[in-house]
Amino acid sequence: MQNSILAQGDYTETTYSCQYLVVGTGAGGSVAGSLLAERGHDVIFLEEGGYYPTESYTSNISEMTSQLYRNQGVFPFLGKPTIAFAEGCCVGGGTVINGGLIWRTPSWVLDEWQNDYGLEGYSQKDLEKYFETVEKDMNVIKCESEEKENLDSLKLLKASEQLGWKYVMVPRAVKDCTSENLCPTGCPTGAKQSTLENYIPRALKNGARIFSRCRAINVVHSNGKAKKIIARIMGSKPKHIEISCDHLVLAGGAVQTPHLLSRSKISNMAGRKLQFHMNLKIVARFKDGINAEKGTIFTVQIQEFAREGLLITASNMKPHYIAMALSHYGNDVINSVLDSYQNMGIFALMIRPKSSAHVISRVGDQPIVLYRFDPEDLLKIKIALRRTATILFEAGAIDLYMPIAGMEKVTSLSDLDRKLDGLHPGKLEIITVHVMASCPMGPDPATSLINPDGKLWNMKNILVTDASILPSNIGTSPQGTIMAFAHEIINRHI
Amino acid sequence: MWKSVLSGIILENIETLKHYQTMEVEHGNTVEEILQFVSGVIITLPWYFRFPVIILAYVIGMLCMFTTGHQLNMLSSEKRSLFLRRVQFIPFLGMLNKLVRSMAFLKLFDSLPLVPEYVNCANEMN
Image (cartoon, rainbow over all chains, first blue to last red; front, side, top):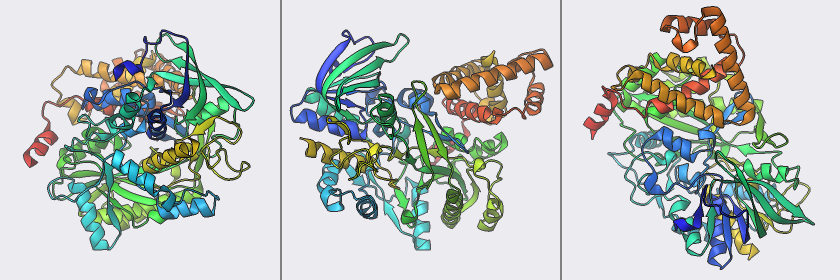
């Protein structure tokens, strides 16, 4: 298998050719490439990150972050506050470093895409067979509530029942999980089913090749057809290669795909309205021990407010993550929290904001992402923080450390209300891990970049199969949706 | 010079952490390892973030030399803290500190402390 994966030093030629060139090996690229290879096509995957097989993963979080993330996990969205975007950059892409959540697209989101954006052929019924296939391929299981492990999630579940709030057991792509709690830095046991465990081996078995550590720089095109890609082999002595192809499949993610289209002068509309989720973390101290490090990361999700764009879960727990989540507090707080580590839990709230960003590709090799914080989101975040605090206090939390610079620990809801009064958005500590909708799909070339077959409106042989094509902000983890859309696009294409 | 400023900011952020104080390894080595990691992160940042960060670090380094006669990482804890408090008015210093602090924590906690209280607690529960 490794003979089919090239890295620095393996590129003996300066020109290559294939039928299908797939840029990106994450959720969208790996599904598309494996389906094409299985149907007998000559496929090359182009991947900017390195190839790190599962057996090379360790529990050294900083080292794994350096290997598996773009810019070692720090890619800024410039605005007030600056938002850190954490993006996978390795063979397997985001699937290697995410929580392995595979949700079917909520029906109300698909209805919105059909009714408001005119997208036909992507209803729940149309996608049903693809969700079933993806769930089978990725070994998706519904997490079960346990009494010994995942006590942070169990706390949420019980509090949710007491409040009468809707919760669901999370569907995750795992096989024989041993609760290492290392999903965000690559599962060292291979229990979490990234595409390294299924779609990529399937593609390689059918003759696909992977060009790793190789960044797509420019798409050469003429008369509405992509001819080849100029790519740079990463490393201390960068070298350029050319890869000719009959068809190009773009799946480099919702920031890099529009960047490549803009740089290649294929579309100046790409990346105009990048959408993203906002994630905020609350650290909670409980009276009794919950040993949150023992257990997997997300087993219960609070969905009571999903339609309003708020999801609440327990998050991954390690001393590193606690310290980082509390980095806007002083070291006295971090010392105190780590002293009662077994009583602590980190809880994440994910918001579907109104704010959107713009990918600028005019200067330099890397895109600049600018965003404007929409004032409506401040109220949304305040409500979300209050709701999360409500369930955490119900669950038995005694202190909450909020993702707000300068705010002391919160000991009650009335205390929180007082402290949220006059909150300035610049004080918020926000990160994002989901970006999308930067090259939206739709029926009208005036308002969309991609047609419902997944093809760029203005190019005959470029397909896009990553989160860029989602018509709008999905409000949930998009991996299952991306994979289902990739299946549909490739099936329509062949 | 910019790395000596980073080193000073790293020290300022980790010196009072119990985890750092109780580590069994040589502190100088730990700071050097963290410095390598944090400077590696900065070097891989997009250019529009990387250059301002490095220039800012140079400016702070120069100011430190002019006002104290020493590099930031060579100052005593008290003098270093005092200097950093005095230059807090410099735009974007807060952002630089936030970046360095987060990345330093990520690296620091990969080294186990001498008295890993929370690890002991976790083991007891198992």
